[in-house]
Image (cartoon, rainbow, N blue to C red; front, top):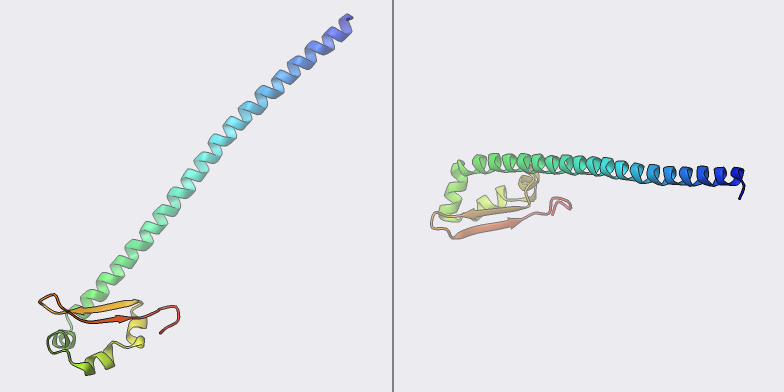
Length: 123
């Protein structure tokens, strides 16, 4: 092999080695970068979900407090008055407070009433 051929061969091998190193390094850097981006996106989504659940909990707690201090509901838990059920535990009332299950429990822990409501179909 002449000097010219040897030179081209050595330059080719060096270039091939440089390309392999460059591709390997780029791949490593990109994978780490994408992993950081995915971790951040995942953490952001988890934080949004936790905030949403906290907001739902606060809203539910407020609804429970509003209904718990109501004298008519207390009397219903004691005397099981069917008129209260008809006039207050209907689809409209439950739709307004955005809940799908409403249970009334008396002071002894016995269930007085359980009302289910499908928010999506409003039934």
